[in-house]
Structure formats: C-alpha cells, structure tokens
Image 1 (cartoon, rainbow, N blue to C red):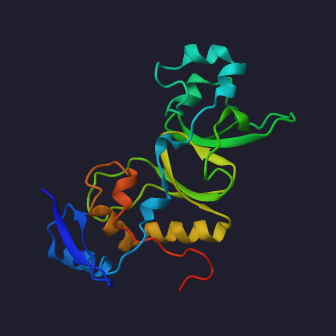
Image 2: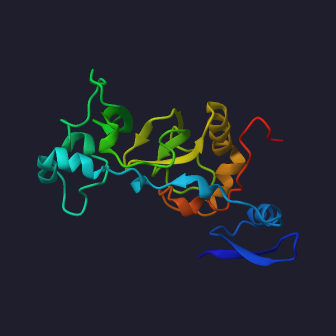
Length: 217
C-alpha cells in the first residue's frame, strides 16, 4: 500500500505529498523537495483526450458519424487514422485551407498525418512547442525510462495514444523540458506515483516545475 510523506514548507504550512514507495531513501528525497512549496510539472501536462475533432468536421462530412463509435464522435482515438482515412492525409493537400499535423500510430509505427485545422478544436498548446510522449509506457517500475519522448513544433497535435507537456514559445524551452523529464531525478519522482503503465496527469505532481527558459539557474 501507499504512504503519505508529511512536510512543512518555509512558511510553516503543513501538507502531504503522496507516494507509493516505502524506500527510506526515496522518502528522504521527497521530504527535501517538498520542504518548499512548489508548482508541479503536472500543471503543464495535457491529457490524451485533450485534442478533439470539431463540429465543423461533422457538419461538412456527416458520413463521418457512421465511421465512429457512439460516444466518441469527437475523440481522436488511437485508431482514428484507420477510421477516417479520407480526412487524414500523408501529404499536405495543395489548397488554400490551413492544415495541421497529428501524431498517432498506424501499423505499429508512429506517423504524422495532415488534417484541416478547422476540423480539430482549438487547443492550448497547438500553436506552441511542446513535448509529446506515449500515454502508457513500461511497467511502472521505479525510475524506468520513458518511451521516446519528442519535441514537437507548433501546429502539431496528437491522438489519444499520447500526452503532451508544455506550451512554449521557443524550441529551446521544450528541449530543456525534454532533458528534464529524461533525467534520473525526474524519472525517480515520477515513479513515486506511476505504479502502472499509465502516464496520466496526476502521476507527474511530485515533480517540481522548472524555468526552462534561457534565464533558468
């Protein structure tokens, strides 16, 4: 079972930080980290379901509804490329409409597909640099490596196979985030809550948010 590490910050406020490990060394690290109140990296994590198809798509292509499951008419599901192969393109169409790319999986490989921008709802990090990684990886072992996270440029989104972290104006900030989440320190803290394959938003909350800009210390 899990335990809760009790801490007191510099303003003498008491609180708890969740952990599912009983290793004394890990408890010591967590106590040191939470001795100061911090903003958590989970605040920058966008869920797999955060990118969604738009009503515009359904209004222009009413036949789409019959290709999708009930209750998932707007979901960019893991198999969306297969279901809507007439909406997603390997090559950007030569027309005046604005297009974006979506990262997903097809035939057991990562692929980028083009889709009209107005066929996808607005998203907070679409126009910014971000890190994209699988929503599930590994076994939940403490400190295990993440499965090939990447820096994605503006106007790239993702299907429900992935999560994204951050909404940065510069590639350098996203690159610094990528280095941070690949570090042993971050993977250790992630493992205090990630006890399954799932990389959901809540498992990142023991990781302090950093300044990823050029002004960082």
